[in-house]
Image 1: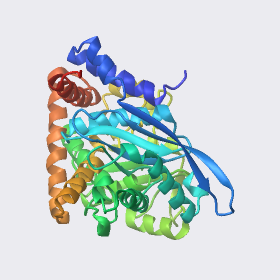
Image 2 (image 1 turned 60 degrees about the vertical axis):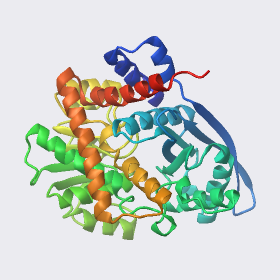
Image 3 (image 1 turned 135 degrees about the vertical axis):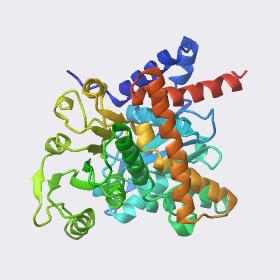
Image 4 (image 1 turned 90 degrees about the vertical axis):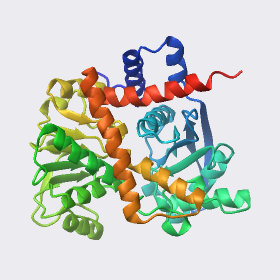
Length: 412
């Protein structure tokens, strides 16, 4: 059976929410159509003097509730359909957490490991110049995603500011602290995933102390999730990166130190695992924190975790979702579980607009407040309607966007 595309999956989730909300076909047409799509050619002069062309994308799915917001992904597999799907998910995520944003996404189809530092900078700056007419602190605010980091955001902010003629820190989030970044932004997505995992344990009646966790992915999300969960007293028993997984390490910090020093997870005393073996470990919590389609119809039946907390975007296909529901596995969906990143991005944007910056404790406290409120709303909706948590999260997010459309009306 062919795997559905990310866009097919996102549209099917939207269709289900529309049905549950009993919205009209007119509402479906409005909600299922992106507001603006831009595809650009991004030329890069390589260090050897050759010029190569790359495809770049920026999708502004919705601007009804405010400026659009979403990451910039540098990954060879990105295409327009995936970008639209991710921008759609960002729309519901921002509405679910009640942030004054619509959803966006962008990126370049490129393998960053093939770029030197100077090539990465030139590519980032040219991409920024190509999408310049449609971004801005009141229009569309990019952020880091897979393959990008605060360094890319610094280059984007500088490129925009040079063209504006003055410094505009609020044009992007996820920047270095000295350029108007926010304390707590680097770890924000992982912190949010960890908070979601702790709350999911409460829902399932599982003791937090010593609860076991397997994490697929050891990048920005997976690492900070692991650190936060260890601090909460949970036991991380396995992690993986693109090359596979390991178990048997003493703690995450020692494993991370080995990874930084050697470029692999094969620390002394560890045992290797395949991705499939990690996903099917007998643990309390499984956290897919890598790329999409990690849990599918083909492997979901073998999952033994009691809880799945989605750190990645769209890591579960509809076929996999159906099996997990049948197995009574609690799935905390991506638009709730990994919303910490956009929540703290919102804090950064607010701080940039006010030119007044918060302490790390203030950031963490406000993140916890928003995420806990959203978590309880999803929990209550799932219980009252007797639907899955994914359906509940989408119902809340889609309902808020639909209401905003209705109140604003149709121009002209």
